[in-house]
Amino acid sequence: ACRRRTWAGTFCVQGAYTGYVLPGPVAALAVLVLVSQTVPQLYGTILVLLLAYLVHFLPAALQGMESTLQQLNPNLEEAARSLGARSLRTFFQVTLPLVRGGFLSAWILVFIQCMKELPASLLLRPVGFDTLAVRIWLEASEELYQLAAPPALLIVVITIPVVLLLMRKDQT
Image (cartoon, rainbow, N blue to C red):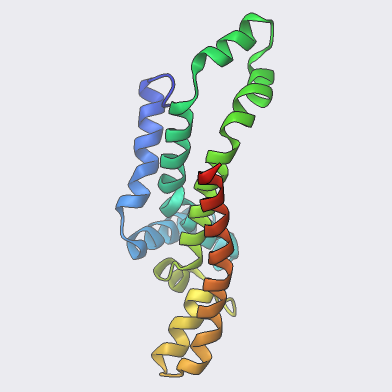
């Protein structure tokens, strides 16, 4: 949608951005209502939680991916097509290698946001399934800070190498 402006592309991108505008609990409830009305068999599964994460954090990934695509010179794709490469081959051999780093960075940032997401996790988690953020919240709400510390430390331990990797990518 950032390379060729069409009404359909604009509509899809704007529709995707609505998930970021909604507060976490509202987005989680919207996903809950949608799933319970359309596919009630999925209610209480990890797929519902992943769908809520996708709805809520897809705009963050799209923003990073869109800026990466805007930096790509369209002449490179046109050159590949003028040499006889079909669209799919052009995408996999020209476009994707050039935007892979930006796309990966965008999804890494989404992963970090998902790790610390609490409202959607509390509302949509399957029975007996606790995310790190939920575990921290449960223990801290009972004032068991010594039990909340290990999952909090785990979030930090997982996040630091990812952030260092992103910083290293920026320097190259």
